[in-house]
Amino acid sequence: MSETQTEERHRDSTGAGDSDSTPALEMEGVRKVYEVADEEVVALDHADLTLASDEIVALVGPSGSGKTTLCSIAGGILSPTEGKVVVGGKDISGYSAKQLTRFRRESVGFVFQTVNLIPFLTARENLLVVDEISSRDRKRANQRADQLLEELGLADRARNLPSQLSGGQKQRVAIGRSLMNEPALVLFDEPTSALDTKLGDQMVELIRDEMKSRGTAAIIVTHDERITGYADRTVHITDGRLEA
Image (cartoon, rainbow, N blue to C red; front, side, top):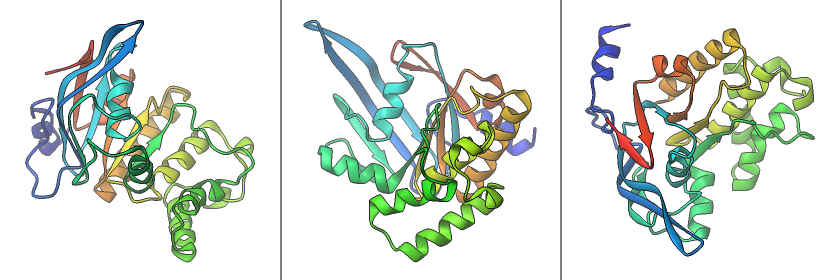
């Protein structure tokens, strides 16, 4: 491990290191409460979390600890009951449903555990669908899709359907899709859970290389100890509370 990596590991677990750029994510006093059978269930309890613009954080905790809720709020899928959420300089805390939809299209990338590729679209088309939804310049979208597929080692698989791809290749397509909108933040849900040890190691290295080369921040929800070794820091969550 390099000296720089060692210094990064000694940051406070809920605060990003020094950076002159705008933080990719700032969560201050974020609370999420659900009403269940006339009772309040606290899913996230006054969470404070800041990510620098190129920081990778592994989010670790048992099932039901609040990992999904935290990522859903950071990604604009859910709104907080209380607190402030700023992503890439945009305060989304009070956004309407319509504003959150646009925010998700433009500012955040998602890589789900099941990848969720559209089965009747090719690898290239799965990337392009992001820009089609956003109604962006078609020529620029084509260039970006081709560039990402090349970088991810998938240029020769661009015309393949998901059914013609291996598990690792599908994950690479999902990563490429998450980067199409040049997001400030990418959220990963157990990206190595369906991969064997060798492919899992390769995937973690790929994620780190892609995020660092672009200066893109990432939260990786994981139970995989390999990922914590590649992350800049690990944040633990228990019963909706972030822990040092």
